Image 1 (cartoon, rainbow, N blue to C red):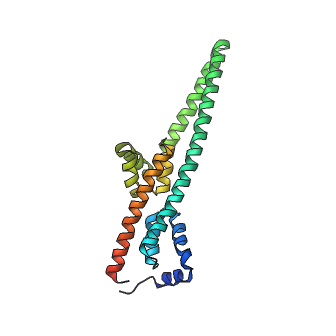
Image 2: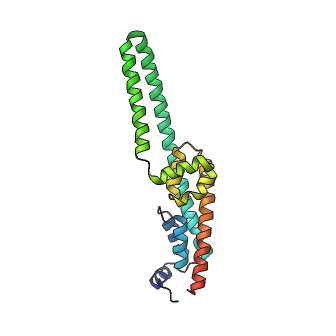
Image 3: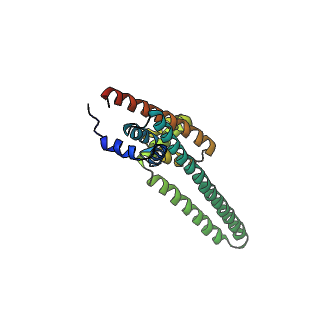
Amino acid sequence: MDNPYPWLQDFINQVPEFLQPVMVALVAAVPYIEGEGAAAFGIIAGINPIVAAIAAATGNILCVVGVVLLGSRVRGNIVARRASRTDATVGVAARARVSNTSTIATATREDGGETSVDTDGASTHKSKGRAKLGRWLVRFGVPGASLIAPLALPTMLTAAFFVASGVRKEWVILWQVIAIVLWTGVVAAAATGVLALLGW
């Protein structure tokens, strides 16, 4: 059977050979394409399957690490801000208790209102994929959820979800790397086998 993508191979052949893996890595940085899609893209384009798989996994891993580090920093700032706000609210309430009982009720009501808004907002805007990922996280832990998460969400969104849930960044990175390597390897092997069967 003739290859239906000769234009893709022609395009890749015009790119210097040392830049071809870089292109695959850049494709892997796109959510919903990621390592698996980029590896298949590279193999269909005629790049050596091993080179394509390594480049795709590398591009995906670098993006996930960036998401985890950034997400961890953002979460740390939010937690610190909430802690300082809680301390300030407690301090205001303690001072108000001494001077005026009505002020205590107002401060308590404002604090409770903020908490309920956050909780409702989080549950209202939770997508089906995130809800499924949350169930997997509870049921299988970070290792199991990381390995099956690509069935529901891209690894970048999965990593962000784990960090936002309070999972240690080192643990998230470890299991996301394992998941990326595993899924990219499986897809690369499948793509190579299919192309060999089709004689492309």
